[in-house]
Length: 143
Image (cartoon, rainbow, N blue to C red; front, side):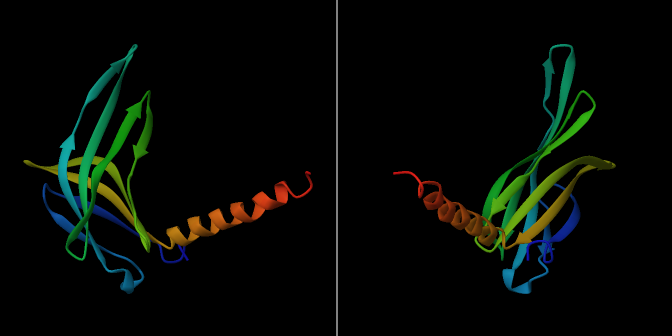
């Protein structure tokens, strides 16, 4: 279910702008992503610099703020690492990956990859049930 109904959108946003993201399952409602802030800290470690770009986002569902947090994009020794903002909801997860920044002179814009993944809570619940079912089998032969 989570692979079939997974919806992915690339958003180009200005500060405080809200963009709607729809799930393939209409009953899940409408999610809105808002760019709150951008940061560009540079950390010098040993002989190289770690370039980090951070996007701070708000996630709304049906007009109500449900989560807020940072998603980052780092470059360490030529390798790119993304750390997403993940909202884990009861019916669907929202995954916001900050992809960096582009410019639209003179206004900065954020580029984010947003995925709405339904059914992840059911997947995790099923995994926990499997582990609970295996535990008695591990101790069955011991007395």
